[in-house]
Length: 556
Length: 58
View (cartoon, rainbow over the protein chains, first blue to last red):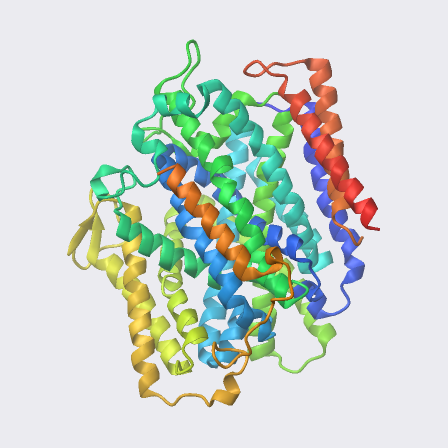
């Protein structure tokens, strides 16, 4: 497909717009807290949409459509079992400690709650992970634009890196957050017509259901056993592995998203941030997963005279990653196509900006200020923050080029990151809700959980799948990658949980006076009876969960 | 720059106008609808509403 003048006008105005936001907000950055925390001045609805948008990278948007084409409505579990309950939990139960402790980052919370080594472990792994994953998504984006529009991959990578660099280096987190809100609306307005046109073309939901196997339009019906559904996972592994361990681990502890809530202007706003994000998040399966299912429907049973949407993959089967791009090509005329490409660019930039702002904060506060240069003036750390933005983006670009040349190394890195991430939620859960948890307990739990995840990977195989590294033994064969991944997370979480408890009981507890504001039971309860129900986090949380339950039942 | 709704509304309204102009001149039908015209109108209305809300707040 190729772009016309009107498409380019839309894309270029978007780039001009995001840069202008950075320029206008530059004057609002006087101190390091303005740069890294947006001066803790962001209203709840802005923080909420940014919370959602920072996670909506291009890989999420393109990947969820691919997953929709590959697994159908089962993909909705990533939202209706995974993300939403975790977002409600972090808002209602965890934000009082994150925001109330005045920690400037998630690793800093670990320092306040536990000790230096736990913070260092989390800060270092997080910093490395964020720059690498932003590089990997940069490469994915460049490759997609090359395939779709024939754009030069080097130009795509360099130009988008410079745009993100400019608006963050100028306006800091506030600039990233304001742009994320704009990006959120562009993603929604850019992709909704795809669903509208696609559904019209297949004859509505019932027309779609008639084109694909029944497993693709049901979320729960076929999840009783792993061999009954295309994802190869049974309900327990899904609910515990994806829902409880991985989703809570991501939404409740990943600084990329938590940073948006920490920037909110009050405790109530911080707690409402993930809850406000949960409302559109609940509806996102209709924007990102449904186009994938429609693409599959129009491939298995195309309309008379129309070609199938999904191309064949070189390895056999369909190339699911092309679901969203091919849908854009099929339905978007000049004009709307510009908006669709802008939505893709917006999702890419919001994801990348999320990584970069989280990275520069953790690097500056938790590594540089904590271990390298202590006690310098605030202006010094602000300069370091800006320099880190440049360095972080430079490393990401380097990673993008590495990903271009060595695909295996990138898969390896993502595998190792998944080992580190799997146990995290156990540490935070115990740290926040059990005052007896000690620093030694938390640290050894994290190490044990990471090792358990690695060991699980080394001891199990996926039936018919290839492995990145040699296995020690194959004690168990999982039916799919997903099943191996979810069960690995369950093992890692359990190892971390048990080890943290045992070691905590063997080591000396910190006195209760030092833990005020950090742990449940030693922190004053927040009283919000004076607020209207829709401003009370607990009430909104219950409403969000009830609506999610309805969605699960409707698409059962 | 105190209210994000103003620039956001202006950008979306601008996109709406561009799509309406494209739809009115090219008139391309997709699955039987002039999608540029329709979606451009949605963007214009949403953008204008954002601008109005921002103006009323100040």
